[in-house]
Image 1: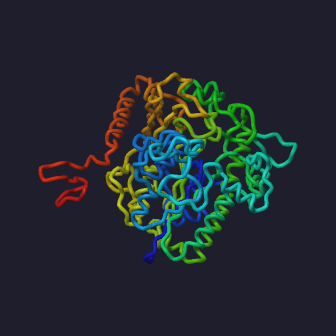
Image 2 (image 1 turned 120 degrees about the vertical axis):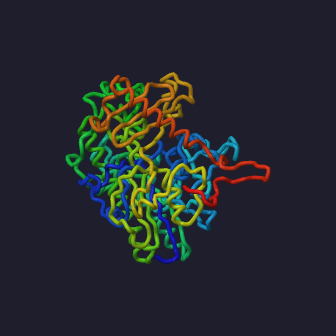
Image 3 (image 1 turned 45 degrees about the vertical axis):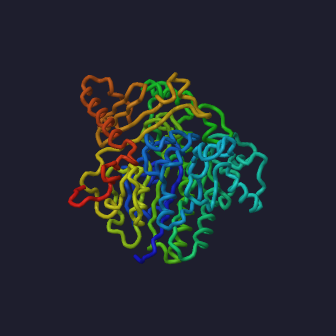
Length: 517
């Protein structure tokens, strides 16, 4: 590997971990991502530390747990004081280019109440330079469509309605009205190639975001028919949504409240009304959207090959969060089930990676990506960061003292499109949960609702709550204590390593002679 070091960080949206062909989903055809996996390391036990989009991306790009960055829901501001990957890259001379979005609401103390960014779901995180915007209003994409000569409908989002005037919005085997050459996936890819062809010889960093396989679950031709519903796995769920709802009050709220309209443009009805055939069709469309991304990534990878940059480039492929896809009768990314939190991660180091093709099963979290990139580029990892560099795992396996469990959080306070706080009659700041999960057990602690405890060996899909079982009382206590210890160890610590002394300021975070790790 030469002196030039580039980073391509690919962040897709709503791609759950078990939809990778080399991790069990053999029905998927993703040759370009399969190549990346052959040349890199796949992390098979990887989670986002929170959902949905805004909080997840805040954790991904700051390296902080939700309890520390506190952008706890979409629309909730991110404190401007936090270091993030974009700012940190500027410190070491990189211009952090970004295609896509970060779903970040700005700190209101850094702007003004009438700032238009407060009228949308989120905007761009400070520190990055957009070279292909999508949020907050998708006007970059829709403007590209209009400039390309596509006649936009009066309601721009109607491009995601099914083809044909006789169709009813909802689950369908028909393509959407937009052609594949003008899809949002094609738009992001064109922006990426434009940037890469113009960046010149300087080292570069590119956050390449894709909107898919995020809803609406409708794909352009030919991707709408790339997979058969018969190929798809059946949903994992109780015989009825009412039986599912008995597990917990939060689950009951979402089962009552999720509508199809958020997932199929223009659709009506409850998500729980989807039968198995509809779920299988939805999953086939989801896979088609994945294959479209893979084909487009092939264009980006081919350019890096052609220009000799592939060997100088670290490539990281991941998602912000997962998707329930009908499991537990749910759609979206919510609550505490694995489908929402387990996400893909593949890391290809530049040059000739030592563990090419390896599948690493150590527990890893989205907060590890920011320090990994900084570590590889020789930057300083801020003391406040909760994650750890993955380079030791990429190069040789888990080091001694690596984390022994996965940790993630979810905040369910009211936002304008969902009102669980009001429905459950909870104070705003009590609408939170945290999870600690290892290979055998999973414990879910709520600030003001009953806990959950699952034996993953006996009950991998988490149907049976053992939190009130006398036989498991000791284990529940143990995991509750582990969760508390985790929170104590990761409490915000930006300045806690400094001391005032008679000789002046002492920095105890700096390496000291004779000290051990």
